[in-house]
Length: 130
Image (tube, rainbow, N blue to C red; front, side, top):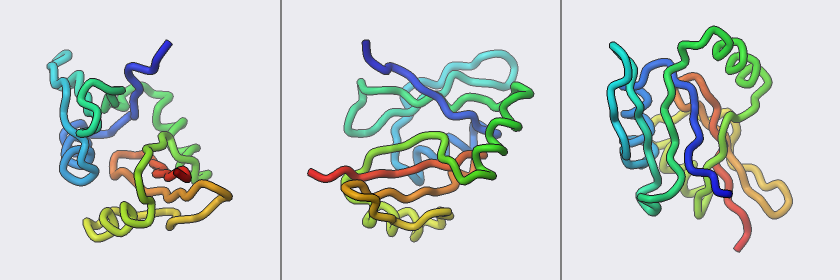
């Protein structure tokens, strides 16, 4: 069993596409119209074109806002992305205007940081020791 697809709920798919591709550096994999305004919009790591896809899923379901607000209110990231160097990625993203809610923090053998994805979610980046 492998993880093939996971998702984050986003308020605006066009804004999410811009943030996840132009700022974070993911690559658009699928962009298929679904209904009148929604899309099946996925991105992947540029290093793993056939790897796990991240669906930028419309946050239209009524339970989404309550769920995401509770997570954000408690400072809990919705997802975690692996990076080679948290501090370097933190500096790169900060220089692009990304707002962090947690600066790089060493927690034993792992270093993490948390940012606001501008789409309603907190995302954690993490580096594990080599």
